[in-house]
Image (cartoon, rainbow, N blue to C red; front, top):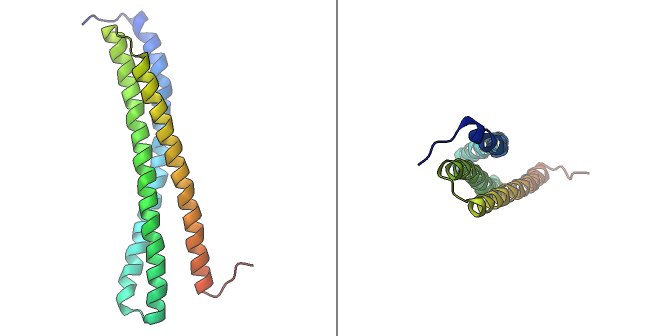
Amino acid sequence: MTSLTLQQLIPVIQTAVGPVILISGVGLLLLSMTNRFGRVVDRSRLLARELPQAGTPEREQLAVQLGILYRRAKIIRLAIILATTSVLLAGLVIISLFLAALLHLEAALLVTICFILCMASLIGSLAVFLLDLQVSLTALRVELTQAGFNGE
């Protein structure tokens, strides 16, 4: 293993800055997603506590709402998994860049594959997050209809 001079290390650090910024941005996205997940879980627990005391019509409404919330929780979990995978792959890109420079290896293919997978995971996460937004709007429509509001 040979050591790198500062002159050789600076371009590697400059190249690694992009994935580091990506990690920071996805971290904020993950914060938003985990907060959303927490709200869905909290709402589900609240409705589940109301279920045993509810009468038949209310019970059916609560069951529908709980079904939608459970679906949303699974969707948000998938978005979180994909975003986390994106961050892990960005970290792998950074490590690969440094190891390639340190060990004088050609790692262009590994870096390229990891970066493409990183971006694909991020795109998948955002697409699934949009799906959750659509499902949450559907849930709101169901709740408003049950309350007698027709949305017009």
